[in-house]
Image: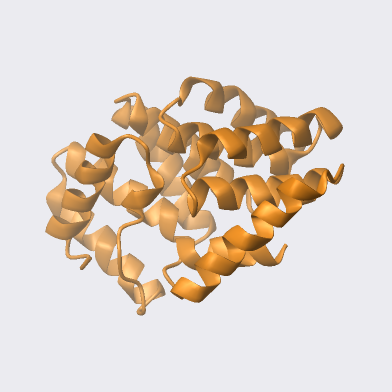
Length: 205
């Protein structure tokens, strides 16, 4: 769980280099331990993907976690996001929709919405992504990833004024925010597009 805390801090652009390194150390210790704790495996898999960009290790951990607990909305949600990070968005739809059915009142439901929006964005389905991302931002106004994807969607649709307003809302909600989160994505063209969209909307690297 400590590794997961550091991952979330990094998503919000709060983590230090030491925290990122410690999260990966903790994740590798979990993977080497042979644990059958699905939540520990989920947290380790998330860290290996988000901070280590080791998608193979992440999928090994997450698929094992899902076998151990096939009804875990948390595991399904994380699997969906890691498939997006690895530029394989198609399986993400099933994982994320299953997570939403299993936990419709989840306090982190916005993350699932953002994940679905991200999957659509990776497939070029921006019109389908937009309402999901708008709802995600409404449900969790301080969740950086939802804001970033919403800004990208608006830029793609030629709504630059709205994208700048969305960027201003992000900075209003999280004044310390900086960076792009583009390093999370295996698809470097998508990462570059995200960086450009944030930059022209007023978000500094």
